[in-house]
Length: 204
Image 1 (cartoon, helix red, strand yellow):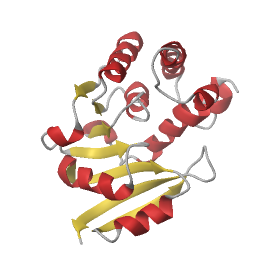
Image 2 (image 1 turned 90 degrees about the vertical axis):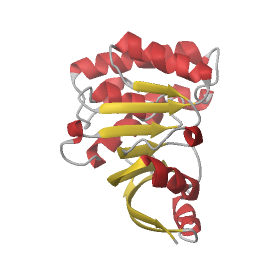
Image 3 (image 1 turned 90 degrees about the horizontal axis):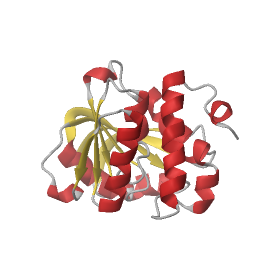
């Protein structure tokens, strides 16, 4: 399926589509050398990775351009680098410890003309990042993500965590350690997936 068909219904400008196409081409090129995404998901990357990332923008608070968006364990840049491309007015910070993946993120940022802040570091080693929007995709179980959120999210910020079919089990497991407000938003790209939005948070 082509990019325009896959991204239909999402608020994507022509300029953003051009930049995402550059990103897509680099992803295919680099993935042959380093393991950025699985080969199976690469074939459906426009849906599995790009549209899947873009849908988070609809859940961002109003006036997100005045906020900071931090993506933990950025990997191949989903969703953080996609956010940086689609919303260049948002201050985006990507955290990734793998030097090869960091090199890829920087290559895409240069090629697409966007300027996210990229930290090559372990999440645990960084001081609190005070994120208004904190995201992480395919990084860790929800309980561990909440520990990261406790340190790196601003007091009034939110978390947006894409999750797969185990989302409700992860929520139940996390509730043994945490008290938190949450909403589960159905994914537009996978009927078995969801995005967990986290509000107020405290240790149980």
